[in-house]
Each structure stands twice: as structure tokens, then as C-alpha cells.
Image 1 (spheres, rainbow, N blue to C red):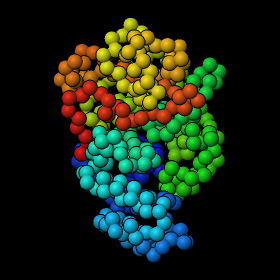
Image 2: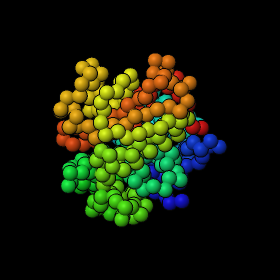
Image 3: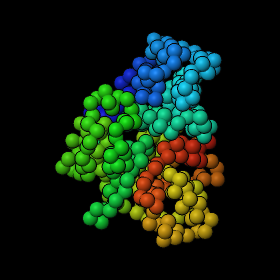
Image 4: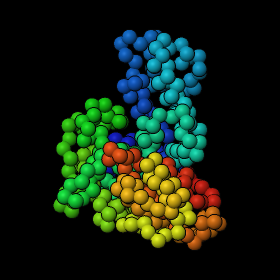
Length: 335
């Protein structure tokens, strides 16, 4: 079995008998390594004392008074966000359960960065044992924005942070610990270089072909299947489509904000205009293997998934839409 995405921290977590991820002290300490939380030279005594106490005991209860005693306003806000997030994780048996609870409540009070890191490590767990590097690369869309470009009539997606050269502050402290270089060259994944992905997975410097009818979208469908089945315990089949025509659109899920707007327009007007069509990156048909888990009004009909890009050609996929937007009667998490 090939390892990948070491920077997500999955090696620092324990597992339940059902395969769910269990928080450990070492995993919590990753967040204390973030630059926003490490006390600067001018930090007050209260901030230093809190930091040292949590390094020694990451699960230690933190009172509002301790945070209020920190002199710097930005530091106080950072600590409030971290402790709130930490307490959410500790309230649940698994990270999967914490994520579902967070998403069902709209993700309020948690920075998008923390949510993406949670998706990163849970998705790594869901993909454990996968030996197809294209599926792993496609799954990066779940937690890292992608820049889309047309190359030789192909739709190529590359990591936005990597191509923009803003990697000076890694999204995970473990990236720095692993010694990953800040400057990276983009390689489009293909049959000849696919095996190199395993060594490069934490550099996020591999692009993927998302052209309709090609294997990249089929790989994304496979990643979405794993994500849904891992988090919800519901077996599904997902097929990548090349067009959306003559379908009974009973239920659809936009995989990003732009795709949701496009789906709403199709739902209301019954047509896909030229502008909307030009923004669609992927169309998928999802079917449930057990009809009993599906809401009555959707039984017998597939669910359509839409992935789109922004006007400036960015893909910002919302992984939570796959676990909150499906017509399932009962949602169950791993753990």
C-alpha cells in the first residue's frame, strides 16, 4: 500500500473499530505549531502561560477568563477560534462525527482553513488503500482550490496556491516539518508519470485533466463515492457524464457555489444557458444501491451533481455539499 498526504496528520490519529479517526494529543499539538498561535517575542505573560499549558496538556479546559487576559486582540480571537474548534473535536468520538455535526450546523464559528484541514485528514482516511494516483489527485479538489486553464483543447486543473506562488505560509505546519520546497513545478498527471505522484503528493504540484469524457472526471467520481460511503455509510454509484440533456432533474447538488446557481437556473427555467454551460467543469449521475435510504419523492430517480468554475476560472469545491445535500433519510457517520 502506498502512503500519501502525510501532511494531513493521519499518522498522529487513533482509529475506532469501525475505522473512524480518534483525536490524540499529538494531533492537537499540530494546531499549536501554527504561526498564528505561537507567541511572538512581544507576547504577554498570559498568552505565553496558556500556550505552555496547552503544550503540556492539549485537552486542558480553557476558561474565557484565560483568553480575556491576553493583551493582544488578534491573539485573543485566534485562541477563541482554536479552543472552540478543539472543543468541538473533543465532544465527538471521531473526527468524522465532528465534521458532520459541524456541517449540519453550517460550519459557524470555524475558519475555512480548519474545515479544509479536517476534510484533508478525513478524506485521507476514506481513501486509505486506494492505489490509483489519479483518484487521489482528483480528491485534492475537496480541500484545495484549483486554477483551470485550457491546454491543447484540454481542461487542466492545477493547485491554485501552488501556481500563484503563495506557498510561503503552508496550509499545514507539517508541510514545513517535512521540508517540502516552497517553489514547485507543475506536472500534468498522465500514464507515464502517474507513479511519481506518491512521492509528490504533499507538494500539490501535479495538475489533472478534467476534460469531459476523460479519466480525470471518472477519478473524481470515484473519490466522491468513497467520501459519501465513508461518512454516511450509504453505498452509491457515481458516473461522470458528458452532457445534461433530457433528464428528469428531480434532485441535484451543486458541488460549489457557482454550480448551485447553475443548478437553480436549470431548475427554475428548465434550460442551461450558454454562460452557465461554459462554466461547468463536471456533470455526474449518482444512484443509491439501496432505494430504502432515499427520500420517497426521489425514489427511482438519480441525483445529479454539478461542478463548476468561477468567472475567473477557479474551482472551489464544497465537500460538505455531498454529505448535507443528498436526499437521504438517515445520516450515519463512521465511528
